[in-house]
Image (cartoon, rainbow, N blue to C red; front, side):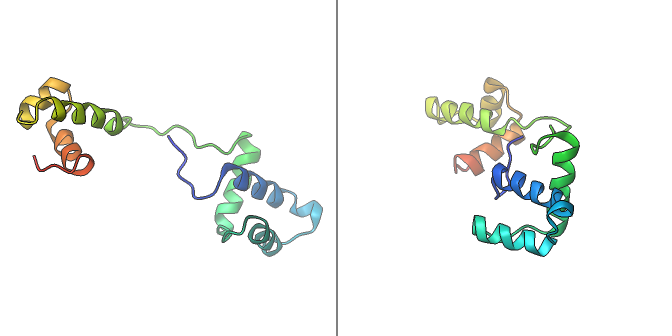
Length: 120
């Protein structure tokens, strides 16, 4: 899964290390937040977020998200196929196009409306 955080991986790692080093540096969380604001020129995340970053980094050794359970989304790849199909034969019905490209009819409706801005 792609990372969708508004903060970069570098910002999260540095902040997690600052939080982890607090007992040795003598800094408070407020001072860590002030440093974050001064260095990255962004509003610092919440206390709970920063503490979870610190736990995650020092428990697993990385900050990337774990793979999610469940069926993976196929919307992006099938949207390209849908667009190509519409360009080839714009008059084909949704039902026939669905069987041609192997995408469920409900997903095809969603692709046509949201991704291609067509009214099926």
